[in-house]
Image (cartoon, rainbow, N blue to C red):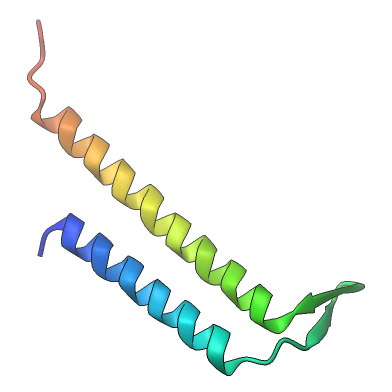
Length: 74
């Protein structure tokens, strides 16, 4: 499976998890280090960070493949 297909599948999975989290979790606040954080919002932020990590990995892999495919000019 190519990296692009894996990337698309990962984003679809994160979107599905986000929809499931939005519909099933309550929006009650929880206490975290003297701050009230909404459970639903916190979950979506964490999923967003994982999705951002997947995007960074995809970009890095694509750039490395382009550099490896480029021939040296010496």
